[in-house]
Length: 150
Length: 85
Image 1: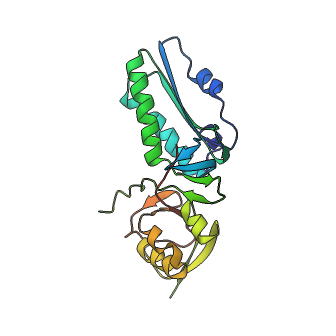
Image 2: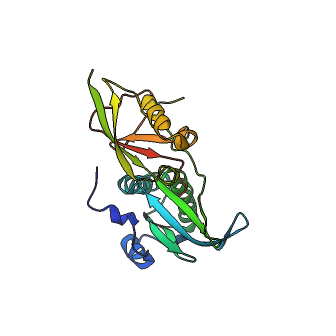
Image 3: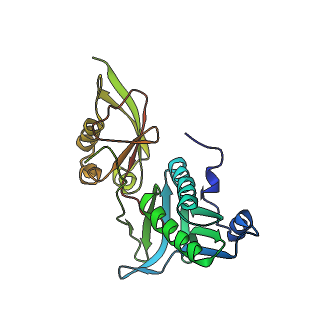
C-alpha cells in the first residue's frame, strides 16, 4: 500500500524546517514548538562517525501520518507535522523534525514531546551507528506491538 | 499439497544479519502460520533465529499475529524492534 506522498513523512533529502512551519501556520496559534533530532558524536562511550537510517517507507509514512492525527485528537493544538530522514547522515545532520502549533504553549510542548516519544516507539525506522574505528552497530529498539499476541 | 510462495523483506539488523534485502521463499502448504514461516526462516538462516523472537511480521503491510495464516503471494516484512528518532 504505497501512497504517492510518502516523502511528506519519510525522505532521503535533507529536512527543511521552514516548509513545516509554513504548512502549519495559522493565526489561531500563539505558540509553535519545533523539536529536531541530530546525529550526536558519542553514544555509549563510543565515538560516532555517522548514522544510517533505514525504514519500511510506506509503513513508516503511514505511522507518522497516524501519529499526527492522534496528536490532533489528544492535545489542544491547531496543527502538527512529523518528518524523518533516511539514508546516510553525518554528524550534526537532522534526522527528525516535529513541529506543533497551538493556541498556547503548554499543549504545544506536550504534543511535541508525545510525538517524538511515540514516533521512536512506533515508526518502522531503524538506525545503525557507524564508529570512527570503522565498525557499526544496529541499536536495540522497541518491539512493534502485535495486538493479537499475548 | 499446495505450497505457499511469499516475498520476505528484511529490515534493520535482520538485513545486516541476512546479508540481503529480500528473497522469495516457498513454504509447505496449504496454510502455514506466521510462526511456521519464522521457524522456517530461522532454520534457513540460523544467524537470525534469536532476533526473530522480537520481530514483528507484516503481511502486505498489516502487522500479523504469530497464529495468523500466511497466504500465497504475500509480501512479508520482518520488522525488528524500531529505533528511529
